[in-house]
Each structure stands twice: as C-alpha cells, then as structure tokens.
Length: 138
Image (cartoon, rainbow, N blue to C red; front, top):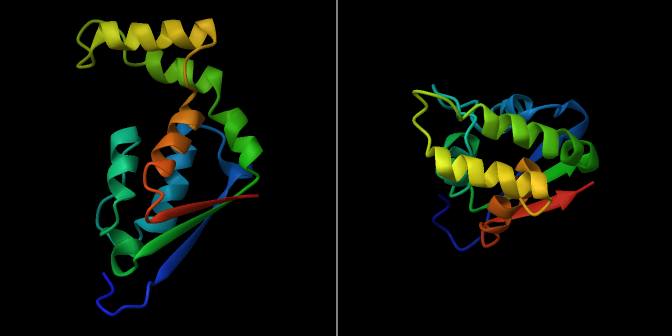
C-alpha cells in the first residue's frame, strides 16, 4: 500500500458484452486484478468480497480501486434470474457441503420475485467496499 499521503488509484475495466455467465465474470476479474499472483480468484462471492479489501495482485500497491464496467446492462441480464437459479441449484443434492435449507430458501425467494440475483449480490458486495472501491457504470 502507498505509504505517502497521496491516494493512488488503480482503474480496471470490465466488458459487460463478454460477461455471459458467472464463470466469465470471474475470468474478467482475474484478468484485471490477479495477473501478478500465482493463483486465481475462485468463482465465489466470498472470494470476490475478500479481494475487494485490496492487498492482492495488481491492486496491492494502490489505495483505491475504480471499476469501470462497460455494457453493464448486458452483465445484469447475464447474471440475472436464470444464472442465479442455476447457481443455487448446483449447490443442492446429496453430498453437497452447502446448507441445503439456506439454498432452498434463496431459491424460493428468487422464484417469488423477492430474492436477489447474482448481479444484485455483486453490486451489494462492491457497495460494501465504497470506502475504497468506486464503480463507474457505462
């Protein structure tokens, strides 16, 4: 992290036209932030939250992160209800390490129109880091 009094900013660019699924979202995050690491961010909301604290990859030497998300409306659609439903359904089943009741509740809310989509959860995570992360929607 920068030790002088000047705030340094890293700007990354996400291309919504190529975010067609949850894996493609994380592929872009890894391409933009994790090139300098010998590991990649997993396709996991907790991992996304963790990386937005900073200190990893390209962002380790900066104080602020600006995410410029082009064609964000396309990403909102791609990470919408269907992708979210598939995300939760993949966590169900015998032998799954996930809390089945929790996942079923999330699916129920999604189907009732009261649950968050994957995109909405990503937005909430980014907003929770607003002291160091800025999102510019294009």
